[in-house]
Image (cartoon, rainbow, N blue to C red; front, side, top):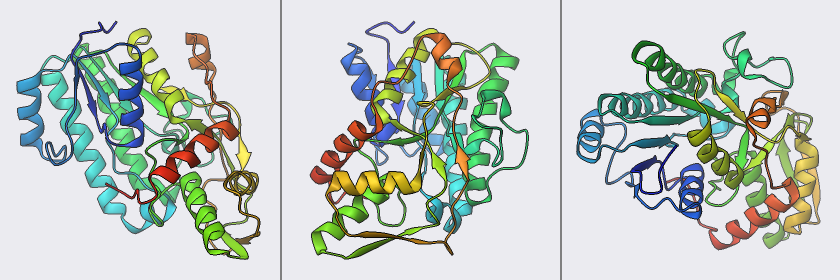
Length: 314
């Protein structure tokens, strides 16, 4: 269990997940947080990461730093996604181990599960069949980090865990027009369409894929919960156990934003994985469940967007 004055390092604290973890830690009274911006500490530089850990020696690490993006970003920068994610996670996990970190929590992503995994996806389906090609590079990097944690546990008896979030959204999301995920991209597109009076908005694919969404503050609550209550080599899924079609999601976002034009679908564009629902029974058995329903969460996310309209990738 983390003590209130335990030294806790949150890697990626300015991103959506990392900032939510910082909010949750502070809400629960943890007061000894170690934070570094990218300009202060480049996690892709091994020498910088080693020097940081040797000097600070954090007792607990939340590894929420990552290079992330939607279908277009993943397809256009395969090598960058693989290199940056693999290097930064290996640097942090290895340095945590070398400096006797008590516990590390690695943040994965549900997109690392097989493309055609049985639905809902259990933690045990990892690496049972081929990955979704559109984000294979990112998935391979994330799987490597998760497995490195497991192998350190097996070889050296460390207590390193991983959590596997579904699609996330909420405060501090990335609303970049090309590099964002589906929900923030929809918020931005419908908002701009409303502002400019566009008669129609064209969305990628046919609207049929099913997706699950978790409000990022709920994920942060689970991350702190797992750090205190879970140990094991297998990851833990983080989601709601509920899903929605991209078409229904688009209509919900348009309604919340106040866009009243027509939504059209470009079926020549890729859909991505047909379905990605997580089995969340493991987290439920541990005693955790989500709190924020999708409509309420999108309303909060839209308010965040309105106050951060120029938010793009850092």
